[in-house]
Length: 269
Length: 276
Picture 1: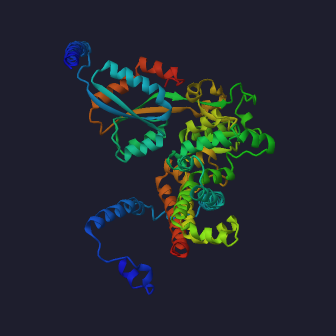
Picture 2: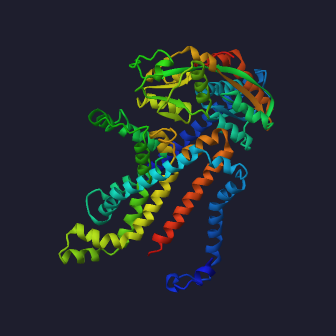
Picture 3: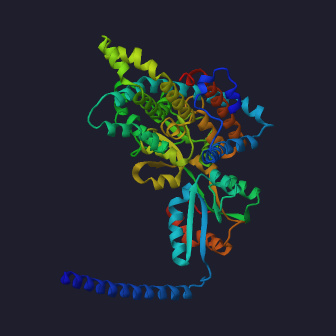
């Protein structure tokens, strides 16, 4: 009995000591952060910003968000990725967002037409279409025209979403008529159909082919030059913390931001 | 509402319905009703009434509606053919792991429909576990076909039917069935002539639930069967895609789907579901 009580007391002592040690440690780290902030030029930035961004930007913006939070301690960047059209509809419907990065100027126009953007949107990257084929390209697809071959199962994006509109433009530029097996609701589902080998090919963005790794093989085609998508970014009028929002847009457009984006397959504006 | 019901001649049907409703029940009931109806009213308020006739005369809308009705009905039929026997198996027989099987049957209810669609692709797709044999032996491919739409809708809707029928079977007295078998009927005859008429209202209710769920099905359908006008583009798919760049058209399409489903459900309710 006494022995166990003794042991408990010792354990408490140990716990007390380690708690104290933890306190000191955290005190150290908090001073460290503070001095970090002091040395940083833009120490005034704070708060959480919400960025609405096109689904194709997910991988690169996640990286840039982490970079931003590291550069400006005390800030937090949260993302909402989705189809540009649904995001635009959300913003005009009053969704709380600070920055909007769209996959087409048309979807950005929905927001600017409603007067929800602050200032003029700036194009920060461009994206080009590519054909995604099965790994190893077993159907030997080398051009957009090859996709019109009978028996080939091709999926396109629906023309209501940017990648579908771009594909339509490219096909028109090549004077081609293509009947796909499906008009998918967004670019990721078009790509998924090829990844699962349900379709033989899909017309998607270069960045999606890059992100899919070796699950698909990309084939470039000249008609894609006729259907290059501009990605505009804009600060929104209702941003509660305009300085932080501005700083995030600056990071996206900086050399550092562009490096991340071109690594994902985006083209310079 | 209660008044009109009370004034009907067949009073016996309304036994147990009283005019006195305790407030603790009435208040939440009304809140619940308002919560369910407000979004629908908002849809009506914001509907583009002026351009509605023009929206509704497009051939694509009617094609999508026709396809929706055909596929939802076929999916309900398929669910009845295999779902009622499955419900009977779960309610009337004893086998090890029955509780587990029942849980598995309800799995599509909790699975996000898009995940259900991917699962269907993995099973019945061109490269799927079963699908690759269907493809190489019979030359049947299901994705991107109307049959694919029906399968996707059946997958999502059948659990509603199974649960409903199983519940009715459990509530029904098994002694009628037993009496029939002791009088010489085979178990199947007893099921067909005694059990089935007994549980008909439950089957009808389950079928209506399954039909309604199939009619509104979106995620599994677009994932498994894709989206092609006239072949796999049902109304919910048309609504979703219209929402992308023409919300007014999307609302108009939703109204059509709502009107049709309300008409069908009301008609069915009067004919079948009051039989109890």
